[in-house]
Length: 128
Image (cartoon, rainbow, N blue to C red; front, side, top):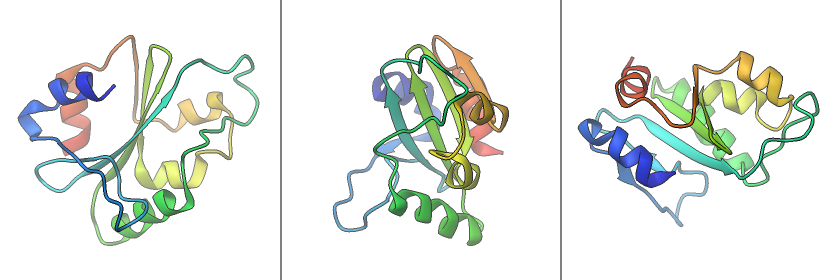
C-alpha cells in the first residue's frame, strides 16, 4: 500500500511517520501539512451491510483528526480493502469509521478507486 501511495504522491513529498511519542499521529505527512492515516484490510466483508470494523483505528487517531481539523488542518484516512481504495476526509472517518457498514462508509467517501489509486486524482483530492 505504502509503495503504491508513495509513487502516486511523489509530487507532494510524502513522508512516512512512525511517532511513538504522540499516539494517533497519522502515517503520512505531505508538503502543505496534510496528514493521511493508512488502513489495510485483506478481504472485503462477506456482508457489506454489517458494521465495518477496522480493529486498528484507535480513539487517538479519531481524536487527532478532529483536533487537527478544528485547527483548519487537513486529515484523511485511506483504506485499502482487497483491491479497492477508499479515501475519507479525516473528520468524516472520525464520525463514521467502525460505526457504520461498508456500504454506508462508501457513501461518505471522497473517492473510491478500483484496483489502484489514480495519481492525478488523489493528488487533487488531497490538496483541495
